[in-house]
Image 1 (cartoon, rainbow, N blue to C red):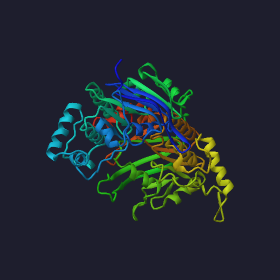
Image 2 (cartoon, rainbow, N blue to C red):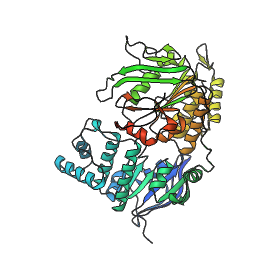
Image 3 (cartoon, one colour):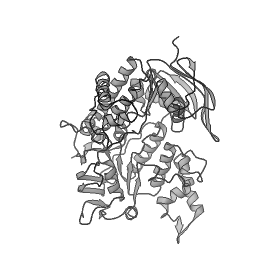
Image 4 (cartoon, rainbow, N blue to C red):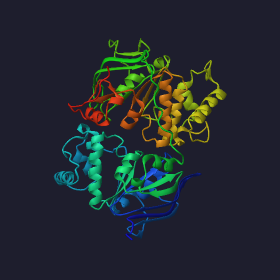
Length: 507
């Protein structure tokens, strides 16, 4: 039998009383693409830290090319041939591609530029080494990260959620590159929540649940439903179809909205028009960096329009362009921001206090004093109704996994009984079980007559949730497309600015 490139036996890691990994056994074969599957909090991130030298195991052994080895640091792991591309890129936007590569690779700029071009030709990762990073698309930035790793001549490449910010066309291009790398002798550890992608790309999968390995399978022998069941330990409920509703009253309207951010590298918004009615879900698709963040802040009230810019943003029929976030919330507007920790919740505060951040008008504060029992009941109800895995309402928000914190924040906003709900990246980085629960809640609200706006980089999510989809590209918003009469490939063409972007426009 072929000696595994990487082998883990009985590997365990704890943080205090929390057992992140327990008795992990894993073999990564040479020239393979190996998936790691698991819910949020299953132990995937800790396992990758152990493999890449960021953390050391408490027990067990790691073998590399058949020899026992402990990586004392990420630098040592890189010297041995292990490289990792993280979900959130670590590039300096004001520097050129080759200047970013120079930060981690020795060599003169001209030599590194030539190597960048050569690797681009060999592996389908073409990118201009003299281009500034801020001028690159997200897909091109990802190529820079992979090229930077390839310059270390890795034998094992770890990719964390590599397709979460890519349009469908770029995903297939990435997969071609990964197959070429595998055929050239590089093994790949592939972390993703997108099960169909794993079935298409990977030849092996290890499934984690609650920090333990629950199985090793060939994902090509199982459908996505089976893989999801193995991952979460129960059957996945089918997607909930939206009820057929007649369009209701306008709850959100943007009329020819223009906005030029202070950031010189940000994308200005131009003539944005959008209408969200009661009883419908409108989705906004687009590659990250095309104006989504500034649009979200304008809608939420974190950014207000300059004086004189009236009649551009309406909520429940009222001009709110100069109203702040608190005033908009009084109109029964609720908002789930993209940034869970920092804007959605305060990590050092308990869930009870984080509930108060937006729910205090729900009679949780009387005459300026917090009604602690009611505030705790609110947090406890949210934990129960939204299946938040946590010891209780006194737990700090920062102690929760990403998926569980997202369920709490979404639940908190839904419990405010909004007329208009705006959710940015509702299931970004959330495992399939939690994502399914969140989406079902949103469809339930839509069926009850709530107007919902969703910004998401997950096309599958938008197609599952939305009545209409609009695409944001270079600060301009497309006309609404009827979801059931539009294909993902059509949305992908809008996302990359293709002139031939078909799709059924809403009447």
